[in-house]
Length: 185
Image (cartoon, rainbow, N blue to C red; front, side):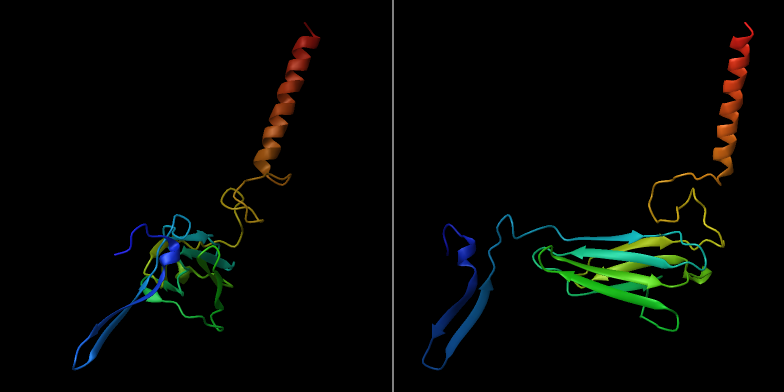
């Protein structure tokens, strides 16, 4: 029994029982956690869940462990394990950070196909699992309202956007109308 337990008490301990016939030994490792050495495990998927057909599809899975990062991450589509494949242009890159207790896996496919629509899951070696639905859109052009070219979530209009031109023209007409009314009164 250890009173006033601290992190300094962490380490290997051995219990021995000696007898005439043999020595019995049992070794255990005590890991004492303080408020800074423990964090709740967490897992999340981010990325473009609505890629256009023919564009790159990229999903990122971040998993953090309680004390150390998980050892690995596996990807699945509709319950089947995804394997990197040069011919199908499927790549997986992994980054490990001991300090932040995270492992990151980036799944990319150079050119999304309609058959890539489905449920994508990532599973960390500590059995954390998260899933996301990916819908490949059957279009060759990007919709600015859905997702801008730079991949940012904000929407900006340019001069080629017809609704912006129409709104601007309507505003100018309204201002001219007000000018004419006040000028002739």
